Image (cartoon, rainbow, N blue to C red; front, side, top):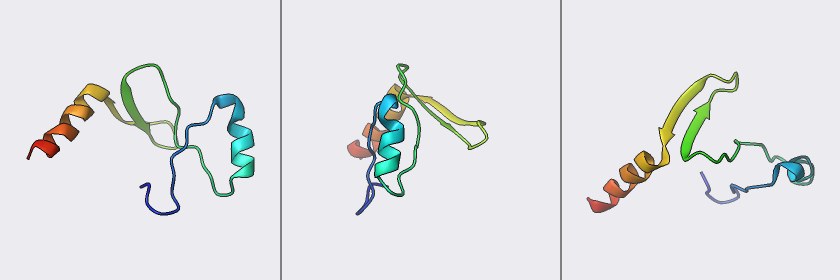
Length: 66
């Protein structure tokens, strides 16, 4: 959630350590990749979800159409 006091920030890989050092409580959520997919894995690396962004966009837009 990006509710009060919660933010999602994209940081270049070469600045990650610095960002984590200066922002208390920050944690890494994932990695941006060139492929148009959303992949979610467990902490042990097990892939939980792998969906094309086009599929996710379509599902989201369908909820807006009613």
